[in-house]
Length: 176
Picture 1 (cartoon, helix red, strand yellow):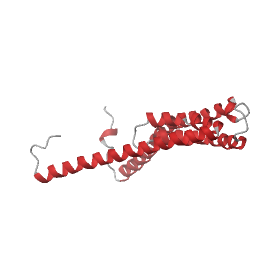
Picture 2 (cartoon, rainbow, N blue to C red):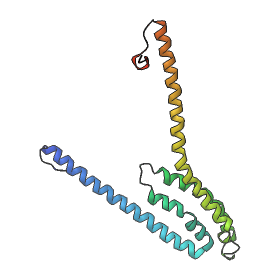
Picture 3 (cartoon, rainbow, N blue to C red):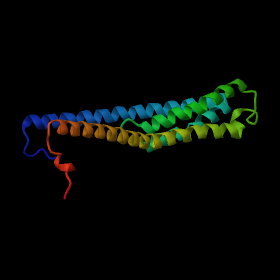
Picture 4 (cartoon, rainbow, N blue to C red):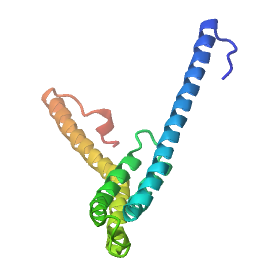
């Protein structure tokens, strides 16, 4: 944006806004770095101490990671919906995987069972479907409510027009 044709105070405010924007970007980059480092080192520690739990957590939460990378809308509703439903599918198996501990092999732990992964990814799919279907259902319901209100107001308007001996509004007159 050019600063030609604007006053001294406006140019100063523009420079200050640019500086604040760069500070916000740096803070956001630092937050992303901290989260990435925490997940990496936490994952390594978990993989060393409890491999089945690590596999269930990191493998099971992949749909949430994909939703985070794909969702760029304000509010990140896709990420929230998929994350919550995915976590609901992962948590019971993490709990049962922790009961096996280090002594059990991969085959007997929940990480080695097909039903575990079907449940986890099915829950994530439910989150994706919710985030797709709910806005469409909401739009249909909202339009139905508006149509009911519109009809109610038209009936009230017609009743008033009849009571006051007024002509029908122009939009509803017969073209004949």
